[in-house]
Image (cartoon, rainbow, N blue to C red):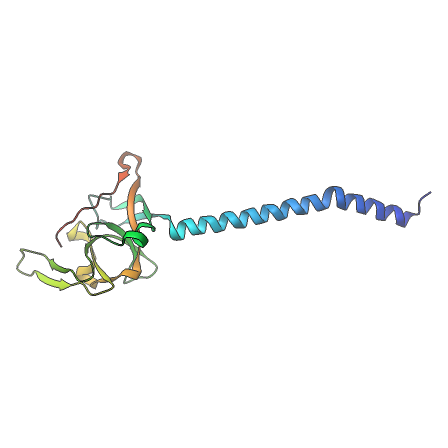
Length: 179
């Protein structure tokens, strides 16, 4: 017969070739595919689309005061820039951990008349590299009237679709409104 040491080597070699190596190879391919998927999802979220929820009543009646789910995209501003009347998601100028959702009412170089017709109305020239943001619900919105023009670098994307609640699913329209 065969020596025990030689038999062990033969069994281990057969096990390695038949079972272990294919399992390790499959696990490796799974790991590679998982990393590719995570990378793809990151790129879609960073450069394509993302989701946000509403908190606060600054955009009522366009959005409810809480729990609306919005889809915003980050691509078209890279191609065509920002336009007055677009609803955007931005990093809050007061809290870098928070997002705000407002409408663009002034672009760099625009003269924005805030509170036109009111006795306390004033005019602001939007500086280069900034936009003027305001909520549609003026009485409940904390916006550029309080913290001034917002740097373009804080804008994250254009809100395109309201996804939740299901009874209110629809496109978010661009509307040019007075400040």
